[in-house]
Length: 317
Image (cartoon, rainbow, N blue to C red; front, side, top):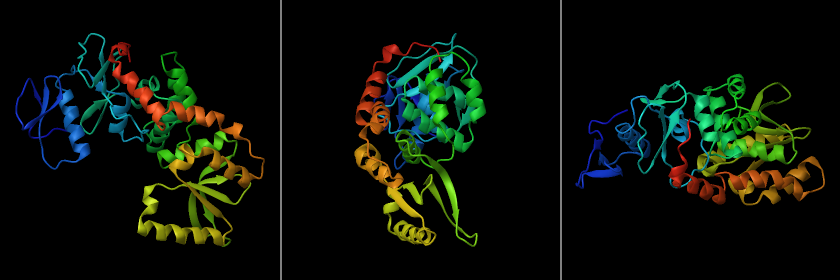
């Protein structure tokens, strides 16, 4: 995807251009949205990338339209090029070597590596929790299948072990990234659930489809994002809760702070739902995974520091 006023390679001193990186400029286009401007930046990077280069990692994941974790403030552009190609070294770009022929696809007019390769590349940086979210999205969209991932994970390439573990936890039925986290929280807490359950009344009429249904209970647990705070949506939600109550289902809504900032309070509620004693030790796995992920400030800072140490990006893709 390219603009009429394309990117320019060279040194430009003009208020009509903005600098993307060393020797790479874009003409300023007023009133452009964030995605359109990002596409323009990728077009600029293509001026310095080899002809056989493909975008990969979280850059390609965004082009595929997958859910991403909350990434750090500084996110470089990720690309990969053939072994015989010259890899550009510029601030804001991390270009790896391909030790194989790229199985490229095209998204929004840009070449991207195959979905499985993109996930493997990301697995070398991202945490397991971040990876599960990305894999779940790729499964939900249909860019990968459990079978294609399983076959891909039989190799011994760097990152495969982490990718294999994350793939084993992905379900593919979630409809948002935070819904994935809510399901994993239940799993790590030892509370079995079924995702995306359709509920009907005694006469067989459809009532609602809920995010998670807790085994052996009448409790439906769902993630409530910011959209649920909108006035129209609140009215719809209350009406839906009344319909669920009519068939004896109790809906409980959870938000990001419930999972990130107050997980112990959330665990206590789950313990009451399933009627068991509260044991804080059940949180150990969740808190460990959360701390290492981009869903925590510590995890984002760790990842950003890793990316800023650009000298480590000499490995092959």
